[in-house]
Image (cartoon, rainbow, N blue to C red):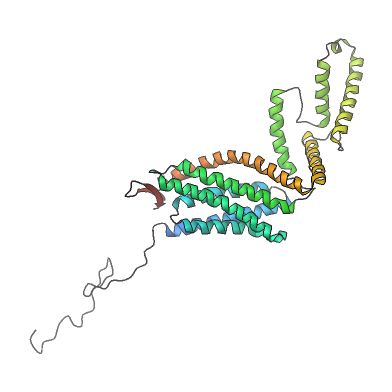
Length: 348
């Protein structure tokens, strides 16, 4: 450049690339925070899991303290918790992050039971619940890491089964500090539904036995079965038959009252009679065996509820699979292949 001439580029402003917003005259590398796809989606799912866990614990606590239909609400909330937790496991790469989420789940579920005054017991229940949840988490993650393809039902089997076991264990153990003789584990309305289903099954095999009506109908069906076994009864006069039926009814009612040792009336529903009888049996056993009965009762309730949990597992597996297919179809998640010919799921 000749002396005295002014450089025409000296005072020009830097030119910017409209696409990248970079300085074209003097490129400068800018540090950017690049988040993985689905970062915010993952945080939202984690938050939903924790909120569902909090809601499940609250609804179950309300059921134990006030009764009513809160048990049904708690089961629905717990089912949603299991389904959302399954997808959180599928889509969260960091096992450490899942450990933190599981601990947070158990903490907010147990928060409502701190008022029971047995803090050490609450912590022990929380620890047992977290153990089974993390066990299922670990098994599902191993299945994902060792498989060449995403085997949805295999992954869901470990996660849902261990999750159901954890929640049933949490429910049974959390119930123990709030146990009283006046409160059996199943409320009367729930027992009535279970009794109705069982009575319909028995009626299918023995249609002459009336278990769904009141006590008077039940006694009448028993006496009818007794007289049908006697072929001479049909040949008796009508007045004699009525007298015999009344005498049989009186004898049967007295025998049942002496056997079950509870107050009952002839127009009382059968499900209520069975419910009061079972409640009386539980009360007598508790008075006889004390704390040993309570431990045995918890074991029995756990296995009974866990057996129903198998049906819940089948239902949740099918529901989760349909949700999984919908998420794939809507491109909310997609399957990617790794260099070692290994499939995994991640957010789109």
